[in-house]
Image (cartoon, rainbow, N blue to C red; front, side):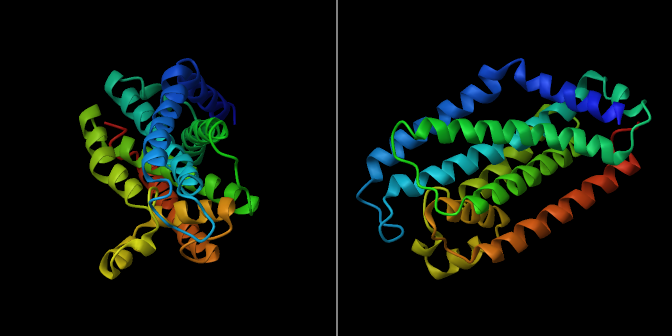
Length: 251
């Protein structure tokens, strides 16, 4: 457990030492989205009954920031270690694959949850928060950050350099996040695009999280929980298998 604690602490220090960049900058970006989209579309876009567009938008922005930063922390850390060659100091100590997995994923979750909380606190300055079912907020925040942290770990294992990691994020993570109903309700889409949206696991993370704030959602939150929980099980099992084999880590 000493190896796990040391690696986890190192990963925490890695982003907290540059907190203005890793936590402050994403909060500012989310705030800009809120100011622009909330100002332009408030009163012009109807989503749920008795729910204003800005109130609808806030949970989506919080979850989007949480997901993207959970992914970024794990992926960038592992790729940086591979590029600089100090990955050997992670592999040499007597740590199990599970300990390495938990250290990277939990640290990335801390960053993602910190950014998400920061975005939520900033939005309170502009709109009164609505919290209908806090249990769903907590469940989907934890599961969402865990999934994206694990996907970040997978991207870091696969990528050999920073541009490969950036390609994974720009062509896979970003589209799935933006098309998950962050800025709109999928029920406003034509039938084909609604069906396509339901194949996106990120949609269930955002929708279940939003249910906790507004008390309404596009799908039953229990269905979202099954999809999100199953997705986490799959990506976690896959990443643990790759770590145990030392795939692209032990050359």
